[in-house]
Amino acid sequence: MSNDIIDIINNRATCRSYMEKEIPEEIMNQLLDAACKSPSSGGFQTYSIIKVTKKEKKEQLVKLCRNQKFIEKAPVSLIFCIDFRRVKRINEIEPAPCIETDTFMNFWMGLIDAAISAQTLCLAAEAFGLKTVYIGNIINMIDEAAKLLNIPEYVCPAVMVTIGYPTKTPTPPLRYDKSVLIHEEEYRDIDIDMLMKAYKEKDGKQKIKATDKLVERIYNTAKAYHGVEHAEKCKQYILDKGIISTYQYWFGCYYLEEEGFLSMQGYKEFMKRQGFKWLE
Image 1 (tube, rainbow, N blue to C red):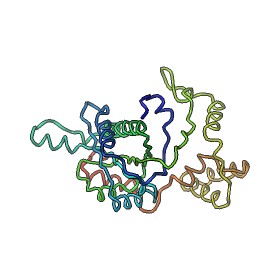
Image 2 (cartoon, rainbow, N blue to C red):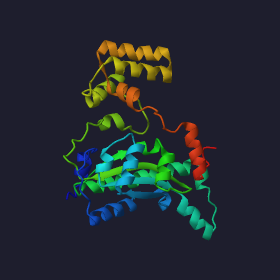
Image 3 (tube, one colour):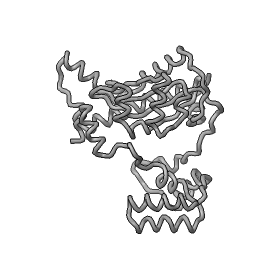
Image 4 (tube, helix red, strand yellow):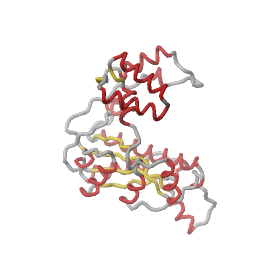
């Protein structure tokens, strides 16, 4: 077990290949205790964590999360939720002014609370030789996820973390240097040549062959989002380079709306059903 937090942060890497090995209850409890001790807005802890270990429920989570099969193999998935239900229930006994579910600011703070709790757990997991992966896809079909997990009013899934013992130690990915991400006193754009150099150093090795199928998909995505002129620009750039870059692939081929994903209207309707009024 490593106790050097800087070493843990530097070596943490997303894992998508797990052994079918249970996490000892004593360790799991320590991780959940750590998650529950994370900082939160006003100290209200406006989050809840739903622990899923049953095989049949994990199989359903796979279907809701782009059929990512490793979710089934990992022993535990944790769904971190924004939760104002506790506040509401306490206020039924102890009346107090409360508009937490009616304002975007409070919803945002609840999301931050859930994210901080999740990251606290992920770092704690590393100390025990466990690995994790964040799965944002849980919100693509948030209404179905809520049904599966019996999530009541004033609670909203935010992110899922899958946790387990890795089949092999994943290599930490390249990250932008702090010179790209840190701004002194105010936001300042760095020189575009420096930015492109940093981008290529971080993501430039991910070169994808420009097959006709992928080029067509990127073209159609660009056309749907930004029109023919932008689509032609994307296509010509790819043909000139002969490869598809990281952003072109992920934004043009993967991170797209799919059948069954909620539309913006669907999210509005879900939030309304859950008692959140900030979208009105």
